[in-house]
Image 1 (cartoon, helix red, strand yellow):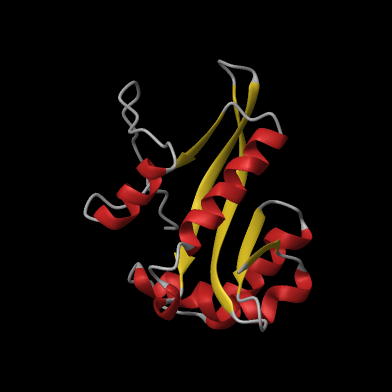
Image 2: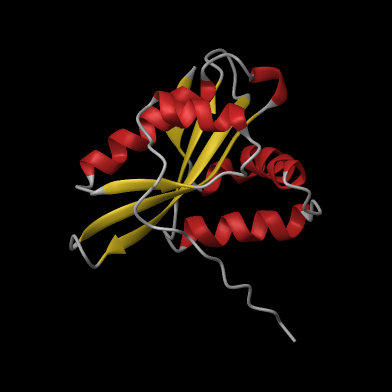
Length: 151
């Protein structure tokens, strides 16, 4: 397996798995809108996307997408690991581990103070993977979400 940073040339390879990721979280697939969303992030350099590719072919095993943020308290960069997904037939092959280690190295290389990730409370598999590479549950801050409706 090899990890590469996604470019616009990877959109056709990435989009089907991104759609499956959205469906995993009970969202409607919207393949065209999903593709446009990914294309916009890549064109504007608003995110970093890593792809896990099979060695022999251009088969996508998984991906992760990170967004930059900043900490006013530490005066440093923070990376938000917003999306990570592994194809069903590639699970239990350490794909997520490789993607996470690559993301962690990128965070170090960009002098980030931390990486943040959130997952559903019942996703124990993801929680174990995150903890295995060093993520710790935030006990200092309680997170809230403010839904913004488009009335």
